[in-house]
Amino acid sequence: MPVVILIDEYDKPLTDHLGRGEKALETAKANRDILKHFLGVIKDGDVSDVLRFVFITGVSKFSRVSIFSELNNLDDITMNRHYAEMLGYSQHEMETCFAGHIEEFAKEYGQTPEQVLDSLRSYYNGYRFSEKDVRVYNPFSVLKALNEQAFKNYWFETGTPTFLVNLLHENRWYLPTIENMQATESVFSVYEIERLQPEALLFQTGYITVKNVEEGLYTFDYPNQEVKSAFLEILFYSYTEGNRDASRFVLLSKYLRLEDLNAFIETMTAVYASVPYALESRRDEAYFHTIFYLMVSASGVTAHSEVLTCDGRIDLLVEFPDKIYLIEFKCNQNADAALQQIRDKGYERKYRQSGKKIILTGINFDTEKRNIAEWKCEYRR
Image (cartoon, rainbow, N blue to C red; front, side):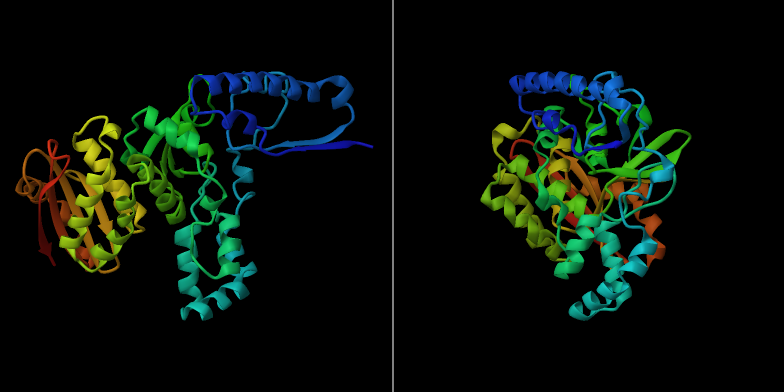
């Protein structure tokens, strides 16, 4: 009788040891050699002649040379457009197969089914796996949300990406650049243990997804609100080493929504003060921007870093249904200089037709005080 071989998480013996120092890396390399030999046996004539089907899944896509050189007849469907909807729920499936569950969810929340579906889309949709412009929902999170009738970060409850967080720290990765990051397929599609690429790890582990493809250049972004807020919260706590004062960041979305900027800045100042001195690699604008970005994004608001306009890039944009914050940072200067740049560059022009209140905010950091030194804001209608 023909045999079917199903292997799930083939790469776990490798990823469990990444980002944990040189000794652990040597263990990963030894496991790689064992795995390479094991997979090679599958292609051996005594085994392959009785196989009907082989299916292998894993978080990471190691190169054929390092793992699959002896099993080189596999059909890799990772970025195959014909399988773009295979591993998630499509919009059509959400609207038809789950219509009854969404109606019950809506009754519980006192909303319409359309409103609940919009929230599900914001929280759990957005994964794109090929050049084909098709996006799918995270099935695990959708099922949990419909069962509990609550919007939570369910996917992140299944595990913490420790090795990825460690790698981003080791590479001193400027975290705001994760949004709208660009790369060719060769950069993010495979990687080697000895030369770990953060871009590849972020994509393969599901923390970023394909946003756009143009002339072979891929643009990436967080797939949805669940991934962005939960991942950035983990990264934020890695900077503050779990300091209790740092947990106050969860109030930031409330203060911005209520336009209570005094409370907002007070909280920001307290959190900056809680960052251990030893964790500060360099106290420059990039450092302050990174912490600010992590705090605001992890609090759950819709925030975007370095938003491109005709005349430059807005350091941080925070958007609510009725208002938009345009935030500019300066270091060892003053808040007036930050506001003046917003005016000179005309950053608000892009949003004048939105019908929303526009709040220009300038913030100056002091490297000696390691904190916010001054802030000012202006309102536009």
